[in-house]
Image (cartoon, rainbow, N blue to C red):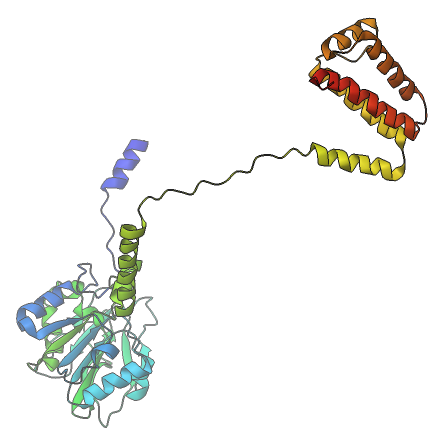
Length: 391
């Protein structure tokens, strides 16, 4: 069952992508690949693809012709629309087709827009036709899909001309209450052509029945032999490269800064990247701190005048000396112990017994005088010197 489900999932047809791309590179229903290809065949070199925003493109004051915008929404800001407006005044043409136009365009041209709807239907299927009798079809063109039907509820009738109308389909292929969806707005020596149904330029519309005739008639208003600038910037489906390297190389100043960094890195590798002998650190030998430690401890006891404690420390150090140097355990002080210590230290048995008798006396008494402490130190030092051969 799992294998069957995987097979069915892998072999089922892909759903149709109805994204409103309007990109000339997309062959999906709402792409404009077919239209762009037809215009290229007809106008050859006169149709130019413009990827920059119109605000930047129209800096060239010598540019002339028709600027063609097709998208589901167009959002010119005030400064950009002002540049388009002044470009039209000089005798050029701007053709704009969108469901939603920018506020700057609508306010400047004194236009208001609304949506058509039917009380007995949820969706709306557009019906379209042109006003010019020579261009109008006998029956309106019907887009058999649920699309918005946007129309101009207010226009400037003194200067603007109605070129096309629309209506929502209501079981009858006839426009009984025409709604304005295509106008011409003269500005100075040029004109704005504003259209509200960009779906007629899509692959879906052009490849359905004889709809291409309607699209051709709409575009005939701008077929004046001049260059046509196909906008690729304002497209919902345009390819956006967000690679950091693309952003760097797309800006002149960042690009040169990037090149300088690469050059500097290369020079560093060539001249400073050679292997060098590291300096050998000077390691100071460990110092013998026994003397300083002894002075510190003795100073503590001398300050307190505690001769008995000093004597006990002296005896403990002497026993440690016997254990480490003579390798003799100090747990039991008997004749065997004395004989071993005397033999290994180079002292006589009598001197050994005499020293340990004095040590035992000091250990068992509660106080030790200064003279006894000095005597103890002297006796132990003399005894140890015999082992080192100093006496």
